[in-house]
Image 1: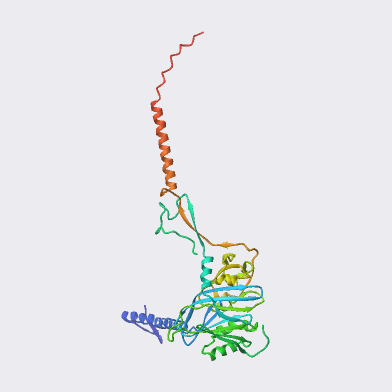
Image 2: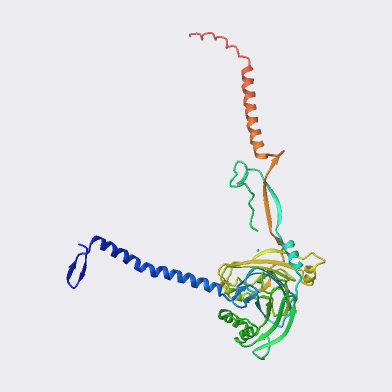
Length: 398
């Protein structure tokens, strides 16, 4: 018997009361759970709106005010002649921030100038996969009678200085839409102070990620970007920046990419005397070479940049878990200078006069077999009948 025991007295509860009690008991814990979920979603949205920094392979973006900025695409060229390194980079950004600061650590004193946008157009044309046709005899998926889906062809889818002040501005210049400052920082907090004095806030996570560069006494290239028209967000493909600095070995800064909250993809062009490769995965998938050969251009921005470093290596790498990135990419000479270019084969069914060759072969074979069988049957029907053998005399009895 259902009921409520209170002070030893058994009190009956009407059926309607019991149903109401169950309903209220179920609703009581449900409301706090729903409220907690709504608060969690609200906190997540507010956290995303307030996200102050977005990492890219070559550095970090810090939007001004409460805006957001993302790097949708990043392309970089590294030129190494054994003493000096040059990095040409072009970023495509999106978001609602009107002002953005971009920070890139470099191992030595850097000079900065605007790059040539045509350089990347040349690189795209040279390293693009080669399209080649490949015929096959027997039908495959997509060929009649094995047509599947829409019948569309499927192919691989083709991407050190001595002590000094905490922050020293060693140079400042205006390059198109960029206000470029070259800094030295020997105090982990000094770079944040400089950003703060220029209207930007250094996020704690970025501050911690920059500490290894401060300890190695690297310098920074700090760039303030602003759109040409005030009141409009900074979006689109930016003009390339061309950095030159001394380095003991060719290195491409990647450590700050570990701050990214989404998978990262690296596309890197390397110009050197020989074919180059990353010395390790640094926490990503295995780097893949998508192109390797000597530059054959004689004129244009690529030919100018490749002078003295004629071998071009295009490298792609995926980082599904950016937080696992362990450091910067150090490049080294590959074992051989073997050339490579991606090839995309377009498979076509072999035809004769517009008809599948296999169908003609099978049809012709069947026709030949039928004709041969019919001819043999006719020949047998026209052959004269042989007379019966004469009777044999009976054998003598002896």
